[in-house]
Image (cartoon, rainbow, N blue to C red; front, side, top):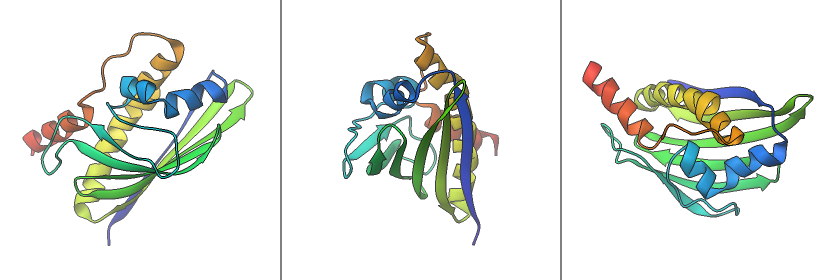
Length: 157
């Protein structure tokens, strides 16, 4: 079976508590990721919403699986052809905080194809949108990013 994981590590010049707040506040997540009804409580089921795309209704269903503030958090992430786990790990570094992100469990051709789309979008979010949020700079809206990427991918094939 075809399978793949997305792994990304990014350093931010901010303390772990600041990065943690950006990962665990529904308002913060809405500004740099997607609109949501997130609550930082183990067992809380929540959704992210974005524009629909081929084979995707625009809703990502998640659940908080674990929390260890301000160091680690794990979610389930289901939408379209994927059923994965997302992990955030924060560690102090001399210049601020290192964020290690992993989305694991893409299985089968459709899910692996989506993993490449997500990886591209996550790159922009972790390298542009999240740093903009952390610095207090204006953020280009990410809302609808996943649906737009999926739509462009469908149109180009």
